[in-house]
Length: 104
Image 1 (tube, rainbow, N blue to C red):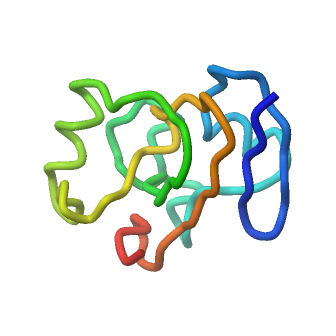
Image 2: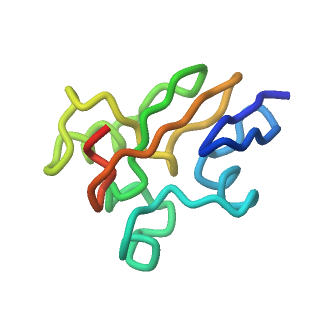
Image 3: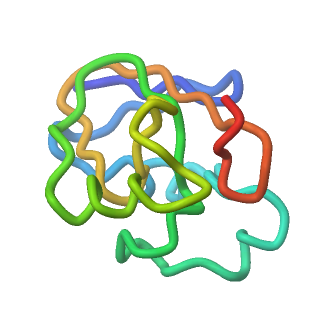
C-alpha cells in the first residue's frame, strides 16, 4: 500500500486513490483560508487544492492541465491538483502559501 506524507502525518491508502480524498479521510485539508469552504469539491475547476507532489501519481489529464494554465497557476509552478492526482506509490505532499497554494 502506498504511503502519503503530509503535514507530519503518514497515511496508507489504496493504489489509485484520489489524493484529495485520502487526505480528507485522514482529517487533513489541502485548502488554505476561505478555500476550505469555497472550492469546487473535487471537480478540478477551481484550482484551490493545488499542492506540490513528490513521488508516484497519475499523469495530469486535459482538464487538470487546462486549469493549471489559468492564473494564479502556471505550468512552471510545478503543482498538481490534489482532486485530480491518483496515488500510485509513496508520495510526499506540500501545500504552498496563498489562497490557491500557488506559492510553494
